Length: 190
Picture (cartoon, rainbow, N blue to C red):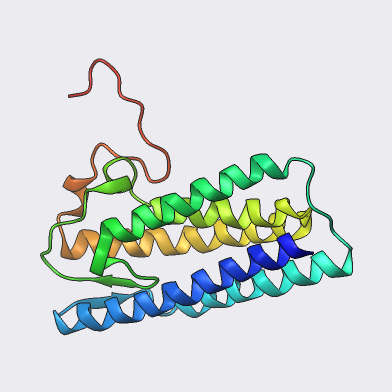
C-alpha cells in the first residue's frame, strides 16, 4: 500500500507542477506573440490523463492488485522516464508546454533529447502509462490507456508538427531524427 501511495502521490504532484510550469510558459509565449493550435483536442488529453488516475486507483483496489514481481525492472524504467522528462522539459525551457503553442520564426530547439528524437516527452508519457500500472499489476489500466494514448498521439503529433512546419524551420531542423526512437547512425551518415 505504501509504495502505491508514494508513487501515485509523486506522479500527481508532478502533473500539478507541470501544469504550473506550462501556464507560466504559456503566458510568456503569448506575450511574445505565440499562437495556440490544437485547442479542440486538448480537453480530451486532460480528460484522458485525469481518467488514468481514477481507473488506475479503481483497478488497484477493486481487484486487489499487488506489486509486480518484476517491480525492480519497472522501477528502473520509471526512473529513466522521469530523468528523460526532466531533460526534455529543461531543454525546451520556456518553450515547453502541455499545449501546442508556437512562437513564429523562432529556432526550433535542438538540444538535449531533441538532438536525437522529435518527441521525447511523448515517449516518456507512453512509458509511464504502461509502466506505472504494470508496477502494481493493473493490466487493464495499462492496456486501455496505452491504446487511448496511441489514439491521442495520432491526432496530437500531426497537429503539432503542422503548426511547427507553418511557423518555424521545423522540417530542416529534424531531417535526421525519428519521432520516437533515435536513428542508428551508419557509416554513410554525415
